[in-house]
Image (cartoon, rainbow, N blue to C red; front, side, top):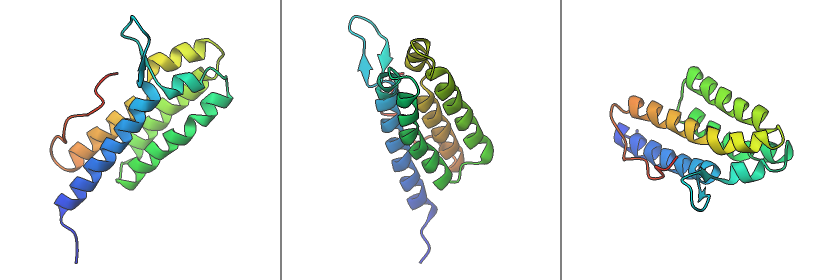
Length: 134
């Protein structure tokens, strides 16, 4: 028996929330005390040039896979690849790359692209983003 479109919307919404939680932990899980500057595991991993940035591609790949599974078009996945590519290339530069990783937040950008796509796909806004700090 075929599933209705509402069940697909619920599954997509749940996946968007998983992606947003992952992106928040990668890009904005922690705050530098006394500031409003947020950073996550991606910024911490980038302290080890090249190796850390390469390791952070693994959770980014999960975000790509989620977009692909939900049917994101090539231009959305292409923009996600540009975001991750910029993060990887500049993030691999010692010191400068770590500072860049703290500010650029490619995973949050990619999660936002997925949310926009899914909202358009299902014809309306999903529940508000739970990890709203950028």
